[in-house]
Length: 248
Image (cartoon, rainbow, N blue to C red; front, side):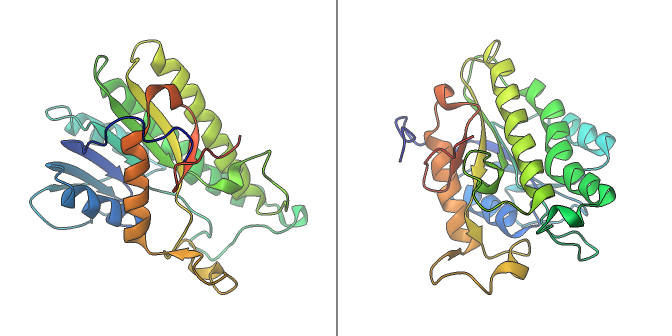
């Protein structure tokens, strides 16, 4: 399990999940609450999410920076210690799925995928990272994917999705280096949750081997365990649900 887990696990008092209405996002919110997190900001496009005293819903749109800025501003009175971006798209709303060959590349489709998988999370970082404490541990994490690894790519295909996640991983590395200069205790990381039983993976589940599909609740527990153990020295890297580093 790499060197993750060398610090004592600790549940944050406050947290924020962008993408709280999705399968993994909702499970992350509920797992945080079950672990004792007192205030959880739950962001979704319609302001939906889990219900309960610990949850504080807000609406945002990944393609509208003003909504992200407004959400960050609304958290200033009680800032989240952990920020998790649990958003992402593999199949677009119109049913367009990942390209299996370069012959199917379409600029409009690529732009949509990058807007949701790369630019949106980057804008969240733009507005949330300035709120993080300089002298205390914080976590900023975004869901990535193993297929975003360049050195581990042996099959090709899924061009826009792979490229958007690779670009996200690079941005997370950039943010980590920049934040380390002024926030030495902070952690910025990418997370590969595995293949989770969610709307994102549903069209591609039929060919999976037995036991390869993970329930959202199990995935959330795995990811929170990884985040609890990450150290500042590991900031800027991508880790899978076991805590192993995903190669760049």
